[in-house]
Length: 184
Image (cartoon, rainbow, N blue to C red; front, side, top):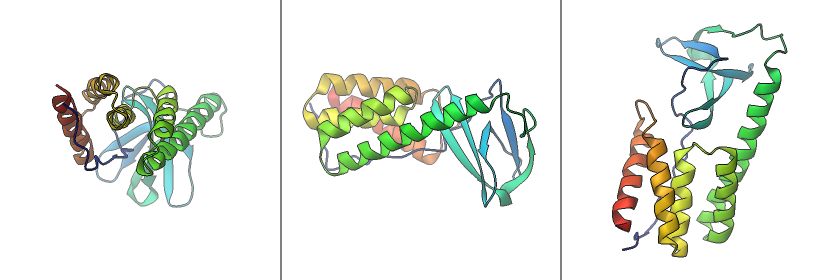
């Protein structure tokens, strides 16, 4: 049985939870929450953090207005971990470029292009469940149900690592479950 695709929406989930990292800056929010990662840009209206977590490479923008305080793993002027941070940022930007291009190709029904771009995105960010799900949807559209099932299973395994899923993450989890059921 194949998935009927009126149109399975491709969700873009940036805000997956951060996990404690060995080398992390911590941003404490006025709400009492905290966000961990490496700060790679400050100034303007946001502080930007990046982290390589159990659920993939993620970036998070925090409004300066929401921040109560910041604890730096090292003095921001020190260069000790700048190379690591720069590499994460570079990889994240390459991932975003491939991921957005894949979504655009999918929207234009250019499924073979989307397939290649999602594969590139997975190489750059292999633990991000959304990209595995999206590649599975492409495979469904191309008629490759066994490949789709593998992608959906990978997405399901990775999605189980999400702690306290947001509404969009819950929607992704439901979409993965529905996709797997429709392929049985």
